[in-house]
Length: 166
Image 1: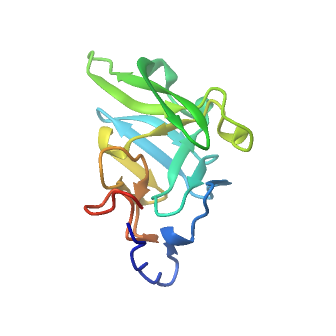
Image 2 (image 1 turned 60 degrees about the horizontal axis):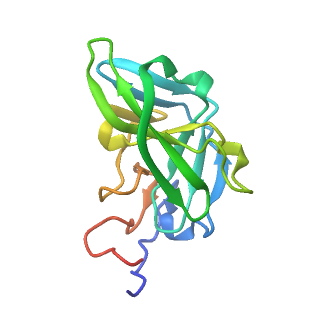
């Protein structure tokens, strides 16, 4: 499939088409938060993001800034051609509410991605709220991808209808 025409970013915006392949890991200057069942599950000022061509940024939280007691292992795994094997995590609320595969991590990422080892990324589609700074993020289109969409990025973004094969 042919590459779509990228949207020109405005002031303070980035085009996902300017992100690299292979992906890049970088620090996030903004506070990141995740809320599930009305409680803050993750809150950090030391997050990382992974940027990959055509995809929304994926935000990673250091485990020290996550209520890991609310997370349990999931039998689900996946493989990223760049980062390696991902382990998935389920959320278990105080009332027993479960959200399967709410987050994933790379316990032993491949070379070049050691910075995200053990960090947790959350699906914005499986949590009640995902925040980048003071802006509430929305899920990256499609069911497969875990990026967070904010007004700071423009696309088209992988996962939108017709984007298979980008």
